[in-house]
Image 1 (tube, protein in one colour):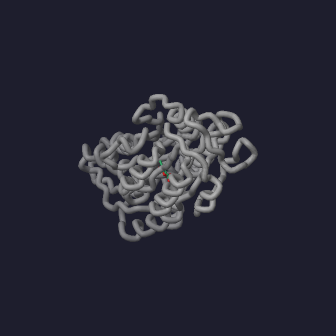
Image 2 (spheres, protein in one colour):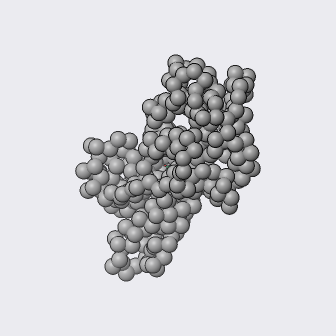
Image 3 (cartoon, rainbow, N blue to C red):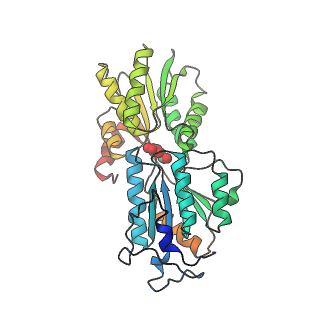
Length: 338
Ligand code: GYE
């Protein structure tokens, strides 16, 4: 891997929105430059790796758990983590990536807010000789040489699992089942894919009809607001499909405020299986949750180490996941880590 010398100190001032959250193992000093073999300029070999990570934001319980996992694992691995929060805005993320390039970090990793519009900045990283590891969300770039690998879930499969549960539940239905959908952030990979996988599977049963579908931006507040609007606009809603637990939890508040029983009057399916979602499921308010694992930190650090060591890395690394009915959620809840 190409290495770069010097200039670190003056560059730190340029790191506009970048906060150094991962404590350096050498006591919080500015990251030190290393030689091309990954050897440190003095301290232990591990502490020499500088990872620039651009996170989506703090929009959900999933994201909070993901951030914690990345920060803890970076610390554990002895890497210097430059962590930047994009507050759900692509422009902030592009700025962060450019700042990482200027600072000549060893590896850049990010979870892209949306799928499109990354080619230019990824090319800049490539030209600077800085490898990029995508984590959690994919990009739609045609040129896969712009990044080393993509570590994350199969969101289409998650959508299919959600749809399959519904198909099984309503296989004997003789009348129309009205579904409302709370989409994740517009243009994001999980929103696009969870919608596609679900639509693909329910297409097999013409009684299953999505009567409204709108973004709730993966947040509780928006989930509640949009569900309120759905309830006003539609007399008969049988099912809510929310692309994450947080939006489902917001929607539950709206449903209860409207005098209806979540999980009974309106069946609810969501994705993530974070603790609050599992709690609601164990109370019967969410009927089915498709798991999406946020604990990507340890695997990400292994990948970063391999990249720095010039070892081969798989082009796509998929995370293993399961599903939970209310009953299964009740059993799994006490052991849930996030
Ligand atoms: O499902 C949602 C979060 O990209 C998988 O983003 C992630 C999604 C997750 O805001 O809760």
